[in-house]
Image (cartoon, rainbow, N blue to C red; front, top):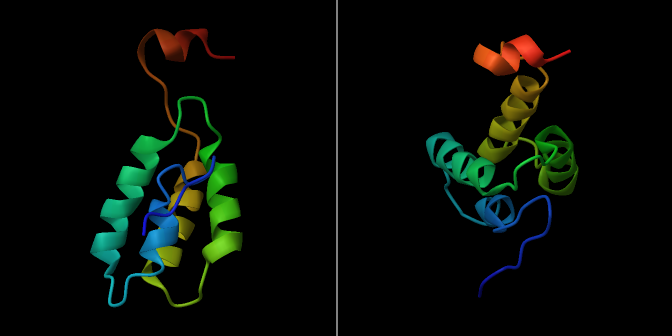
Length: 89
């Protein structure tokens, strides 16, 4: 049975990861990368991560740890090089 996604989880990868028995943190990081690459350009990934954590965030699950780490990393400003770095406010 294939689960349909939504704007925050287009391929339902995160939802499915919580249904996999015995999933490892390494597996979750791979799924997270696939999730991140499937997000549309310009989407607010931090907001999506907050929603996904509220929706699925089971304590002690490895995907919850990965999503939490992703949210923490999304909050850190990144250095922008090249033209983008010179034209940003």
